[in-house]
Length: 416
Image (cartoon, rainbow, N blue to C red; front, side, top):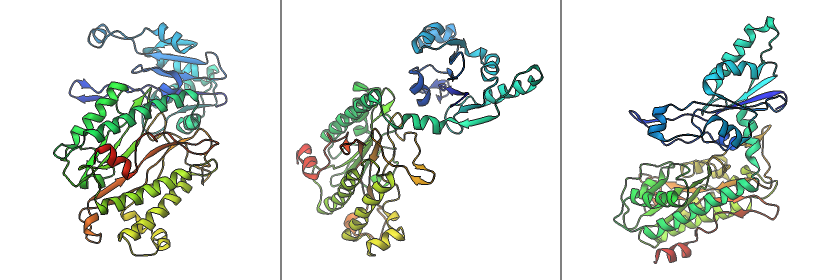
């Protein structure tokens, strides 16, 4: 950062309905640097100045303490994170110009998520107005998301322990969902099994669970979860538990009746082959682009074999004909957010993988129910297989290996 300040906001309560709020979920970057989950708090880090770490926390009203319970006091929170100074949030307007005086730049998230950008801009204007008195305003606002994303790319031992726990809980929930599946249930009943396990063993879902049966599985981010589970359908579940703000991210597909039909099996094996090829490519100095290309070629070969496309594999690839059935990329970073921060390209070149990176490998095939050009037995079929992978010097470690994905394993678990 140099002689600069990083200003982060924890975020506040969000209205769910009328005068009720959602359960508070602190901003990931704020939590990453502080460990705190205090609504309305602000953190200011100045590595080359004193105080280096300053905390601002809203004072709790008597009414809030009665309704929501007492919160730790300012001094207790200061000691908990080792801050050099702590103030009530009401003092931010006065203290912020003092903390920014003479700095070269201010880092803060620019874009989505909680931000103190209005307060920072007001503080800069205050300093400019006091220039004759010797105060100096920072001349540069910088987006902190790149800085923080790079900080979080390589998972240290503590981050990996949290991530492994989140993935373990996620996997257990998928197994419970498989065992609970039978014709006549509804998608929300399977979601209840999954998210109930997340709450029993963790802190809840890391993102909104996708539970799609039949043609609903062809919708990439289907979250209505209201449809019926019919005999002969496949069920796609994309769900992950959160633990200490780290999240698992697993997708599995299984037959509602316990056994894959011949066409379902053929399509599933295509996606599985792409998944396994992508995982094998998750090695040091490879890249997410390389993983995508390997998985995509397997999918293109499979689309021809299944009768979905008739062009050559090279033509399917070059003309992007595959996008009709596979419109998304194969991987994303995973960590303290399900789509974790971190640059995907460095100066326009795909980022080389390094030990400690965690990513997903999630190829899929999505064949719309009304696609008249597809073989009838494949219409309305949605398949995605997603694993979480740690890049190591010894090769890719599949963190989700405990969740079966081979046809025989799945059918055996379902009792077929």
